[in-house]
Amino acid sequence: MPGRRGGDKGVERRHLTEALRVLGVPSAGIEDSETPDFIVDTQDGAVGVEVTEFHALPAAPGKYPRRVIEEHWEELLQASWQYRREHPDLLPLHVSFAFDEMRLPPRREFSAFFDELAASVRPLLPGLGERMVENPRGTRRGFNRPLLTKYLRHFAVSRPGVNISWDWSGSVDAVGTTPEDIRRIVAGKAGKSYPSGLPLWLVVHGGINHSNYLEILGGEAELFRSAQLTETLDASPFSKVVLLCEDGPQVWSRADGWRAADH
Image (tube, rainbow, N blue to C red; front, side):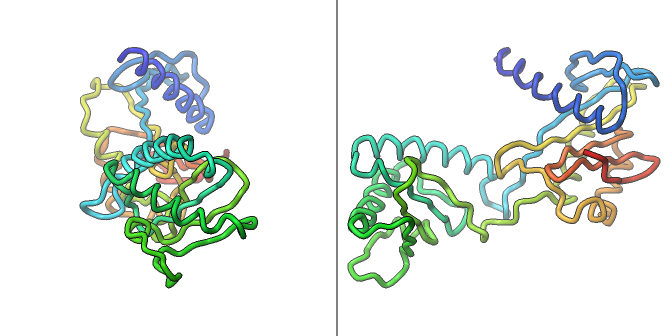
């Protein structure tokens, strides 16, 4: 899909430009490449730069990666809009879900899940104020909603807005990046075949989803403390690594180790 790759390359180039700014490296030119992604002409000579987006691992072994769940959520959201178009009395409502764990109804349960939700919401409409929270596992009389009970910790209903949103439960996992996440990325990129004799840098950036939110828990101090990460970096072909974190960039070099860089 050439068009998609072209779009990806544009995103990668923007992050590369930001990394060069963070490093204080003026560039006389950036050339698109494949392995590495770019060749950058600096005052010290050509440098190959690999640019990659951070993606979190599953919260636990055997679980789905977050991005897979986020994509499934998008399908659930689209299905919910269709359901609401077919049931216009639900259109003026905003329903917020808090899932008990990182698990969503499969597609075959979408319709039954919405039916249970509609049956639970409609009795609340006459007395509905700004926001009402319902616990599917509570003791309200006559409340028998097996799918809501199975998947939700609670849901909230309010009149403003016209969309259903997903609240990430605090029990899902902390949003943040660990040294092991970075070690995994470095190890993966280090295994590629790069031109010999070309200095290499690695740039890691985040995204807008929970699955690729890039923020180091504990900052550079935590990165310094990870012996496994240090060992992987030392064995890698990269002389610099730039993490474009949400809370500010982190830079590693062979000479100085980790440091927090200016925004």
